[in-house]
Length: 247
Image: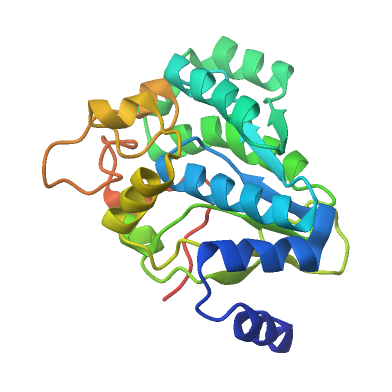
């Protein structure tokens, strides 16, 4: 499997996000899924995937994990994505019975109590829906960047995802990070140049967008993900969608 990873890395090389996404659409077809958390990076990925899809005559599949606790501004932007881009836009929600049991036994805000409690909430509301979103997929693309946090500093443009292949098939699930090497400045320059729609909360000091009770604005000079689960140590700040890779 290392040989296949090396070959994919060689084929993708240091390509621009458009080239990475076009390659992925050609290579994986309907088996490619585009993750959308509605942050600025994901909007760039959607923009470029839609452009590549148009050139190839296909509709990329984009998915949103609706945890039930998103900001209203997230739903507003999701509707703009649906209207503007020629993509298949899919939504995955958590299992109702699991959410009801969590709230019944632990209340609405148990995630503030400990890292384990927060990860339990994330597992129900995000990780398990992600497995459904990736069912049958061959690859998925994210807007993750190395510069975002210490947990992403050694991110690869292409990786093998051994965590979320829910199908149980022997074939690998590939994870693509077309913006891995991009800086925040590059990302926003692209947005301004191409008129990419962005989340309203970015203008209110929210560089990273998540669930409403788990996201706050950041102070000048803070890490871009400092507002995510701000009560925790930075080394814990992943929800299970993107497990930290070993250096």
